[in-house]
Amino acid sequence: MKEAKKKPKSGQIVPEDVAAIRKQIRAFLDTPTANGLKIGNARWGVYAFFDYDAEPIYVGQTNEMLRSRIGRHLTNQRTDAVAMNVLDPFEVAEIELWPLWELQAKKSNDKDAKAILNSAEYTVFQQVLEQSSFKAVLNEADIAPTTKMELPSSVRGRIIPDELYKSRKHPDIRIARRATTIASLARVISEREVSKGLRRTLLTQAKRLESLAGKRLNEIGGTIPEVEPGEEV
Image (cartoon, rainbow, N blue to C red):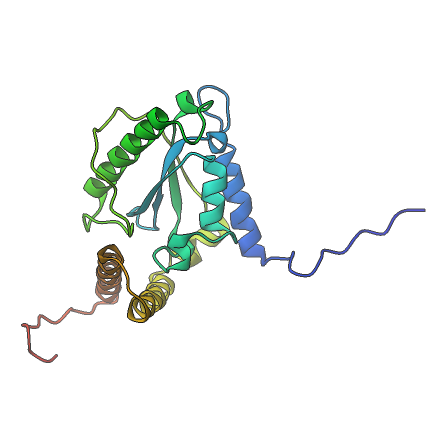
């Protein structure tokens, strides 16, 4: 007699698009590197997130495994950046990872290894700032200046399946998401004492929203009115 298949427990079923994106993320993190190891299994490394315009939006580091850190950012395991409405996971279309394989056996409290990790993060941060149209990303915390280093080979890939990419990239959808994120972030700022960095993030988000809204208006043949400070449209 065949055993009946167990039904998923309540809360285990996710929407099809979410499941498809998680599958794509896992496939990306399983990408083999030159040493034959999966990129997501690098314990020490730096990562950068990019939006649907290939605009860099966030830089981070980890010494607990890239797979774990990326998973917490982009799935149901929340991070401070997501909880504070600094980063909207919906905005992330591509990821680039810089694994520090030479530190793989180092303990998380190794000071020399941490110094290398900090240097790698600072180098990546400066690199993406140069790539950014806004010369800014959404990081709330300042990344302390340190000596730049020669970065290891990186792996970059898209985490949105082809069948979802076009709809998620639609500017009207992204404008609505950004406006909601700004409203949520502004509410957080109004309700508590926050760092200057969080206010800087709010400004960067506002610039990103204005830019996308302006591009969308141009696409449909509209023009952006030029308004002098203090004048009404």
